[in-house]
Length: 242
Length: 368
Image (cartoon, rainbow over all chains, first blue to last red; front, side, top):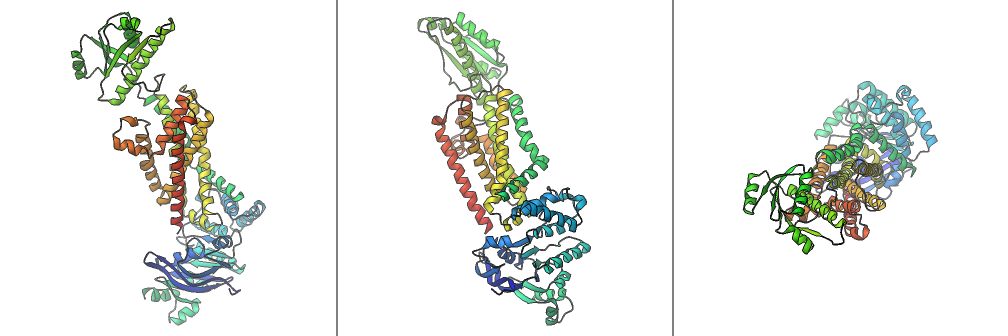
């Protein structure tokens, strides 16, 4: 494995019955990179992601995440990645502090470390006033930001974000991406799926999946040049329509 | 282990912050046991019976007086020959006829043995059964009174079978039944709902991506319910003991162990349900239809299994609750120990292992 790469996939394939959800995809993601993983609904993004985070066994191919093999070392992968899904994923009936404590706990952080993390995290997000309130009472945008921070609580090498900004307003989306940049600057690799093409422009590199295959993979700038269009939106439409 | 404790703690937060589940957990047992105990009893009150007394002597008169003095029966009419029996039944008011044989007292003194026949209207088999039990109990009571003052043991023979419930209290039958229902409800339904809730909210995915092992997630979800179910079982037994004066004849320790075994059976069923349902509603429906109904109808809790048609009797064997009811009735009412209950215990144990194996298998398939 190249020292620079934190994710390497080679001919990664997943077949359900006679349906090939992911068809021999190969790509690498570099350390500290923001990697956009795009595709229409049903293109195979989620399946591919599930194989990379160790909750779905690939049918064939090879993949290495954070230095560990997805077939034999899924447990070590889990310790080194963070994950946040499109569905909001903190507990509504726990307070902000309790959520942080719980997730810190399942990642094996010590009590002192959790306390320290919780304090910085709450101050960073400006949640001091509400830290003992139930998460269910927070606006969606705040919840998403909190969920992202919690997914980073154990300082993972890679964080996987599955449509993290679904349903939030443009201002919050902007703030969310600022948080993503901040994490990437600290050296965390960000692997993100999205349906918003303006977000795709923020990524260092972007891959576009169509029918289980990666049809394009490059920086947003080069993709636009290659397809002779002005926006990522047009690139996507050109590819997805076939 | 520390991770695990954190997980269990979180689970308790969920339970204690959800009023609905709190009510099911702690309100339900009390409400049900009081409801079944006081309101919905199959006790009989002032049932009309007729008497056919061929003997008309001091003893039969005493028995008749005793019966009419009890609050369970009122003597509707005295008839004088067998032919009238059918007629009084046809009128519908009289539910049972008591026939004393000829020379009842004489037989009692000469042969120390006399016979009473109980003919009950079996259009309602439950009531008929109860009536015959109650009459039998009164006869026995009278017989004991006779024997107290003499060396000779007099015997009054009746033709109906004696069912175990010496103090004529139906609540004794309900306590084991309600306990079974509550344990099933709390353990199976609540766990299946709490696991599917994590699936529905998307947090299950987060947990599976975390370093927690799937087995830790499941056990962590189940542990609080074992704990709460044990508390529930204790509350029910205490209610039985102090509100209804129901004795526990056998070993409390054995009762506890058997209850834990049944709780684990129900939890395994709950996990199984959660693996096949995607939403909380589905889990609830499957729990209610698939578990509660059979427990109420086919376990022998309300309807005696022996009076069911053959196919239902066979089906009742696959219902864990049936075996648990036999076990706890045995321990509570008859005071028997494991030497009589090992078979039922073994069956329950086998079922538990089977359900656990099945849900582990299902769970793995789902992860694929």
